Length: 135
Image 1 (cartoon, rainbow, N blue to C red):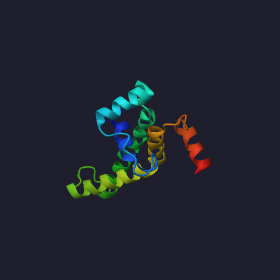
Image 2 (spheres, rainbow, N blue to C red):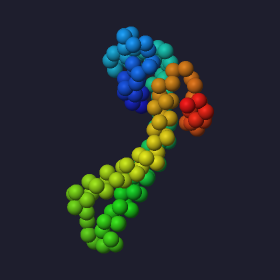
Image 3 (cartoon, helix red, strand yellow):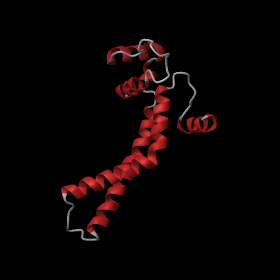
């Protein structure tokens, strides 16, 4: 979880967090972990992790479900047959796209909660309400 937070902070720094031309706030993994610890304490390392857990469970379930539905459609009821590697690739890609599309709002809020330095969002659902009202 701490490295996931650092990864997202690296991805978004410089996007409007600080004025153009200003030095980067996070320059290395270790420096980032220390800065988060000093500013937010140990809990700061896990900011957004609850949202990640809430997101990953339905996403995985939807991906398995989607793959199974697509597999049955390709095999057309022949349970003894198996998918070719190319069919498995396409079924997995389609199932992943299906799952990601349905769980994208959770992923969006996970990222927002992770980079929220001002405490605008109290949780996933209250954050969605704030975003819907203000954006």
